[in-house]
Length: 226
Image 1 (cartoon, one colour):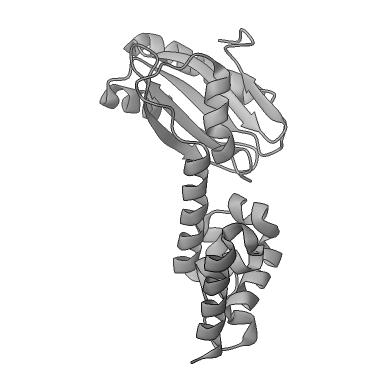
Image 2 (cartoon, rainbow, N blue to C red):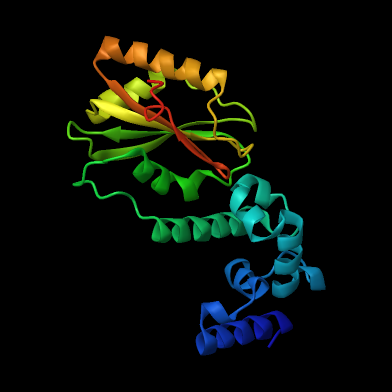
């Protein structure tokens, strides 16, 4: 039996004996990514896990980086990076399930709660549209665009085409501020105004524009900015 196989069997046995909560971050990560390329010690399961955590900035860093960034870390590669991001996404979905389709959204806090885990720790801006039916019930969440640390351009035609395809009479725009400051920028306010004006032409209403960040959240509707 190879040393790599023996190490993985020991970690699995420990997992079954004490549960996931009894394992270290390194051991849990080793179970997900296994061993890296090559036979060097640094590429064996625990060595790869330790170096990956160090280079990524810990678990929070792993959660923030996208799969393409993680794939460039030594020993990880695209397949293991995809496995890792899939594991994070499953955990996020289990922790914050999608709002029930049959229940109308009542306030901006519900939108924030659903999107916070998905967006607040990203190191780039990501813009989403939550499409609603005529009773303010969620139909679908769509990622509209991703950008840099400080900006993320959105074409209003993309937003309204999605709404019209889904038969959504209204929607909520949601995006993050990687800076940690949730206050709307001039660009945020201008985008909101453009979407409100364009929506009148196609009879699709922007209900709210919500900004989430590590430093809190802001609803433009709650602030009377819609």
